[in-house]
Amino acid sequence: MSDSPVQPKKVTAILVVAAGRGRRFGSDVPKQYLPISGICAFRRCLDTFLDLPEVSCIQTVIHRDDQQAYAQAIEGLNDSRLLPASFGGETRVESVLNGLTALASHKPDTVLVHDGARAFVTQRIVRDVMAALVQSDAAFAALPVVDALWRAEGDRATSPVARDGLWRAQTPQGFRFDVLREAHLAYQGDAADDVEIVRAMGTQVKIVHGDPANFKITTADDLQRAERFVAGDTADKAQR
Image (cartoon, rainbow, N blue to C red; front, side):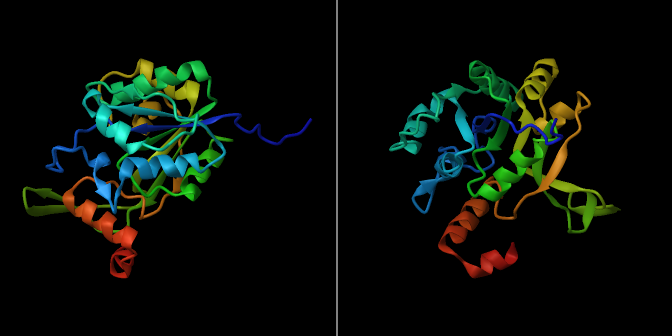
């Protein structure tokens, strides 16, 4: 009998776009639908996932008010792996659980949860998270903290914070489907991400290296950075 790990049969990506309405961004249009050199962040995510043959299907989770914006974002996509969108809830946790419920009938072995405002996720990151799930129930992309950290009161620094062992979480975050769904069904309240939810159940989570380019568009400055990134601005890339 071979000792080789069993490869997952299916990998599914969920793009969670309804967890926030972009209030910090200050735009009437949710940030994931704002164009970056003519193509919104949400569509850029979908294109990356659909270019991977390992992805069996994609379940999007959108806000009910964004159906027209979503239809425009996916215009021209005829890939059958893109499933009908499901609607988000009042919190991020509810939105992800709605997506997991929609996926249940497809019986995926593993699921990757990605933030639709991270426009520049790479195939390398996605595949690294997938590979980690061969031997782990959960894994996510992250970057080690390299800057000095300070605790503050208002605009006054009070005390340094040790950065040893600290990581900045990115997405996708990958899980065995049943593990994530069980954790969500048992979880109470909201959470910053799905790693927090599975850790509450005691699940061990593996970290894989992310990429500085896989940043989240949260502010107007982030959108300008994304425009520069697409344009190939060398100065901006040097800052990364």
